[in-house]
Every structure is written in C-alpha cells, then in structure tokens.
Length: 515
Image 1 (cartoon, rainbow, N blue to C red):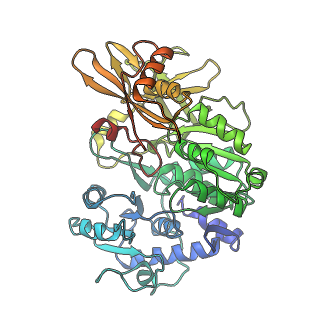
Image 2: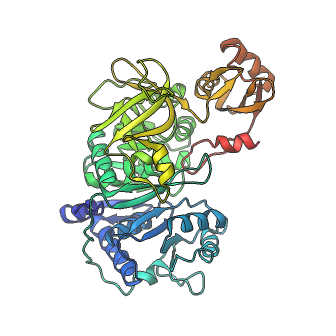
Image 3: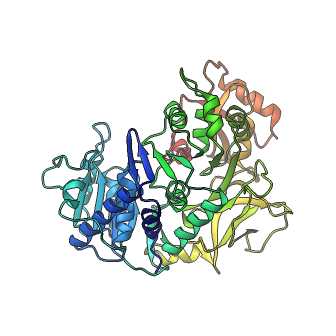
C-alpha cells in the first residue's frame, strides 16, 4: 500500500499540534487538517464514491484545498484539481472528460461566481452525482438552494476514518495540461509518482519542520501541489496560504511570519523585485529567507540577478511538466548552481536531447528534451493514442527544445511549439525575450510568430514598459535590430499595459497570437 495521503497521516501522528497551514490569523495543526480530511473521506464514501472514482476539486489557496485533496485520497478516490478561473463550458468539459462522480467547488466571489458557473456545468455532466459548495465559513447555510455546503456535507461524519489502502501504481491525481494544442488532456499521476517527487523535493531543498513556506502558487497546479504543499508536509513544516498573488502582500507575509522558503514563477519574482511599500523591513525578510525556487517558465537573467541582489538569497531554477509530477531537473544545493540552466536531472530520472529521428544529439546541440524515470505519468486519461505518441519506449517527449552541456547540465532553449521559423531560420522566442529585457525601459516581453506569406512566419514582440518609461515601438524595434541578428529581431513591437497570464503567472502566448 502506498496512498499519498499517508504523508498527512504520519505528520498528524508525529507532530499533531504543529501548524500545517496558516491563513491570516487562522492556524490549522496537522491533527486538525487530518481530522477534517477524514470527515471529507467519510462523507464521500457515504455519498457512494468508491475507490478509483474521480472527484473534481476547484478551490483557491484556502485550507479547504488540502483538506478536500487529502480527503479524496483517503477515500481511495482520484483527485481532479480544476482551475478556479474556469467558466461553465470549461468546467463541464473537465467534468465530462474525467467522468467525475463528485465535485467539491468553492462558491467564488461576486466578481467570480465560480459556484454558479459550476452548478450550470454539473447540470451538463450526467456522471457527476454529488455537488458540494465550499464556503469561507462551511457551516453557513447553502448559498444555492438544494446544494450542500462542505460543512453540511461532512457534519454527520466523525473524524477517524482510516486511509484507504491502494496500490502504488493506482492513479492518485489527474492533472489537466493547459491544452496549447487541441483540448486539454488529463495526465494520470500515480501515488508512487507523487510521493517520490515530494520526497525528492523535500530532500533537494532540505525542508525541515522548522521551515515555513509561502503558498501562493495555485495548489491546483503541479508546481504548487508537489513543491509547496506535499514536500512541506513530508518535512512537517508550515505553509502560509495566500489565495491570490500580490507582491506587497506576499512580502508582508514573509516579514510577518518569518518565512524561510519562497517558490514562484518568473512574473512573481519580477513583481516582488519591483515592489516597495511603507513599513516593509527588507532586512528582516533577508534574515529569515534562506531559499527561493523558480519554475513554470524560464527565469530571465536580469530578474534573477535583481531579486537576488535585493533579498540576498539564491534562486534555484528547476524544470518539469505536469506529466513529470512535475520535478525532473534542478539546480541542486549540493552541486554548482549554474545560472541560466535548469541544473541536472534529479535522482532516478534520465534526460537526453534527441534529434528528429529520436537519436541522441551531441552535447551543445539543440534538440527535443526527452525524460524517463519514476516521475513519468501513467498516461493521458482515456487517450491511448496520444499517450503512445507522448511516451515512446519509456521516454516522455516533452516538446521542449533544450541542449545538454558536456558536464551534464541542461538548458531549455524554447518550446518546440513556440519556435518561429522565419525564412528558413529557426528563431527561439526566449532568446529574443532575454535580449529585449536588457533594454533599460522594458519590464516584460513576450515574442510570438505570426503567419507571413513570404517568410512563413514573422516576429512580433509584446512589451510592457517600466513605470515612467517613454520608449516608442519604433525605438525598440530599431534598438533590437542593433543587437540581434537580422533574422531574429522583431519587425513589430506592440506596447501594452500588461500581458495575459494564466493562474500560475505564465504568459499566455496563445492569447497574444489572437491579438
């Protein structure tokens, strides 16, 4: 038996009174989280949920996310975390594609009425027999007639249910990919996949019970689940939850709670590097913060250097995908940290760079990143053909372009889907973006390829200027022409106040292409 929920069971036994999660003035101990999760598990079983059934969960970074997540696992069911920004059509797609038998959903806010959208989606999902609303105060009356709140759902059930025995190869979580091509696909991750990845992350980052991390990455995302939540639970440490990222609020939380670890995506690092507010004590933050972790997208070197200078802490950059649980490669504390790389493969994981024929290319040459190991998904839910295309002879084809240095460090060049072919020349948007970010008046940049009848594709950059900057599009085009090869520089620059991003802070290039 290896149920991922046993990591919570163990900490509830070993340090039941230690705070597991903190939000505002509320502190939930490991024993409390485990007791609530067991009541969720008992309620699900009473509602007819059987081991192996899928249970969807949509909840922001509130204590109810880990309570429900581990409750689902304790019942032997499969957790299907959903993005809290989804609308009715998207929710219905994920419920129907996963065949979810139950849906635990946050009620939302007046601005984002998630519960109403979800109820409409459930009416279009014949397999979803149980619908429960998570309210900020779960004992409140249901905000929608006929729909129980989580408090009402678990009220008849006492704590103490034992964690269901499952095989290590059984599916624990189905994580849906972002769907950059076609409809989103559900990556099936086993209990073994997720336990091993959390175990490795805890040891790589040297988490202990004395650590306290900031949980601002969405927990419905693989990065937040493994690196922020599961690895910290394995260590017996504390996670301070923030439902949404705001740079000043994040820094205030780090100062107030004396946080030791921060995990984020590049846009978060940029915002925190730029943030300032009355009453912020940077020296107090610097005195406690020992480690920062970046993933989800390439971290621009200018942002890395600026953040490290301001906060006096190293940023370790890593790499992974939902399909790899997610951590596959990392700059590790017991080895050289090489800025601009994603480090070396973690224990038990192999990586190589392959050419179009699948053969390994020489060191230093770009090709597709292939990965194999204990972290590779079981497959895409109900998609055998796409699974066979993605995993060949045990190697996951990532779709990312990278290169291997002679001593085993890896670099990501770009997404193969994002690569621009202009007049027969390969242009990697990340390279162009890195150069644009060295312009003194540029804050953010994203580069995409647009169809061109003569060249196949033409290069366009979307740019956000620094506060007070007055550069024009034409000036940035001229500047980039002076520092980039003639086939690489963007022929057009669109100035914007902001760039579209998903819930994890990743820039949505699909939306930029539509613009």
